[in-house]
Length: 436
Image 1 (cartoon, rainbow, N blue to C red):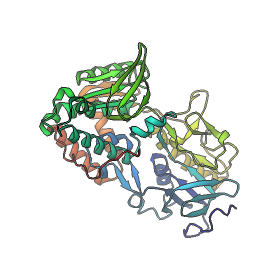
Image 2 (image 1 turned 90 degrees about the vertical axis):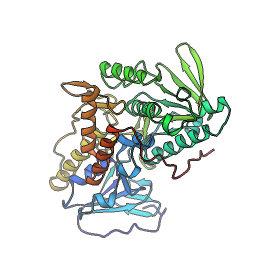
Image 3 (image 1 turned 135 degrees about the vertical axis):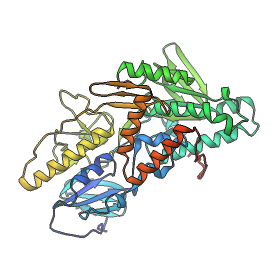
Image 4 (image 1 turned 45 degrees about the vertical axis):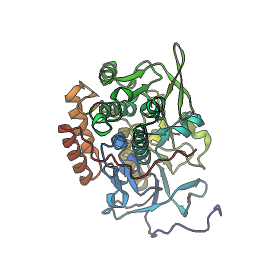
């Protein structure tokens, strides 16, 4: 075994098979839940001590929800799970030859390893965009966007010149998927209902919101009906949607865009990047196992090729089949289902020596909200939009949030906002500073 660390991660030893899980996202959490109180020892490793509900991060970013409404402490989630041990650590290397995971606080041996590290923002190699924009993939991103937005609005009322005020109040969202559309709609409602009351020094027409999409329609993974309805609502909210457009560069002030008619630029201090994600890979996994998007190729049992006891689930995993030549979508439902199926199969492997059933993804549909009373929903047999779509979106997300306390807080907050557009937490608790 490697001598990179001399310290062994301190965990109780027993005779049960040891399963090390890396990552407390949707995949990892649901995998562990299915193995609760089973004859296995589970060691969960994550560099953060919480699970985050990513679909609602945009509401934290626009001051609609408090950060603690969308995160749940890991120890509280599994307080009754007697066969699970949690350690807050960052995994730095996987030694598959010696069945060892090396972290920044020590190493631990495993019998089975489950990689559920999820994904992060993909800037497609642009160092400038990565440096000057903010992604929307973590609670840290959401808090930073909230502070950044409010700080720039405060600067805009200080009496600066017109050009500076205009750039401080321009918000550009890149990426026309659900995250980008939801962020654009939420910002548009902030402008329409709150800007005049909270920032009377800023004229409503000076705050502009742009949504830039490289494809020929927004919400490309959904039906054309959903895309057209979302576009219509965003335009009604005065969001400027640029289709067939790609951001080429950004220096913190000027956004250079390539369009069908040539190049154009937008002067803006606020750029939110929601244009793509990539898998969070870990050193030690054979690079030949990686496919497009930094994802790990797995078989139908989520097993990594040539590794008998190492598995990958969720966003980090790509299960390529004739029906899914690009793998399953990087969404919460796919991660949840893979976590549950792998738990069932791994338990069968431990007890009987073989897996029971290959993974089959059940697509339950896609949804996206555009403002507080409108949403689109592509379900298996029906399409919904408008207020009915929004009610369904709200219900599905509310029951999916982890923890009763968080469900109650979010539900109460939404009820209050339905009757009023007031946002209770427009506070700059921690100033955001770019790492220039």
